[in-house]
Length: 334
Image (cartoon, rainbow, N blue to C red; front, side):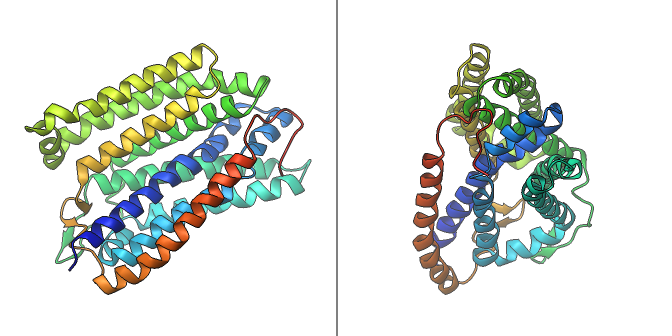
């Protein structure tokens, strides 16, 4: 088997999942923040900031999940039964979020049910994504190349902590997005929420950073053995430095720094998770080479992906550029 093909597909899938987390994270964050205000015009303005983007952002989730199924079918066959319940909950929550986003506007003024569905779907989807991540990181029991655990192995303290951390992270992304995209009461309200969410993110990140090396020997060996320890310490140091800049930017009234700094924090945390687990796709037993599809299948689908990926990227950049700038009260894209 051509050893470079699984690496290429792993990079593509990791990039797709990372882009999904960053792009869909802030509009899920809007839903997480929705219950913090009951003002009708503020809620309208919050939803309008993501109206041109939210459905396109989910393209990256489809690419990540589809890529896993095509390029690493054995990993897909192990991960899905291990995390079937949180995956189904996540998908149903995303459906509720999407349907409520559209129906809320046509149901005005009687849309309380859709407000609840929008907020609830966003919170549950974010929490389920964190549980899926935690369930994968804590390890999946595999025997003879197949899932050998129970349906509720994911229902443990570490995955639940990761669920809380993802909700906090998306809330921070949503708050800093509103700081960047709005003015007036909505922006000030979002700025007042950003620091509490920042504290929650810092606490969850610190807890996960301590929990993983203490509980999982493979991760401790990756970070705390020589020569790795001499250069990997730069990653948490850079994360802390960016976090400090975001905190100060929120306090001094910066518009763009908090959001892009939060993206930097997410990117560095994501890189840390990749460093902790590579080359395992199903920790702690199956690597990207163990679970890869046959080379012919990987090459065939790679050509299609490499053709479509630039199209998706160009479209995404075009949409974000077209709808750049701040959204003022009373304006909307819906």
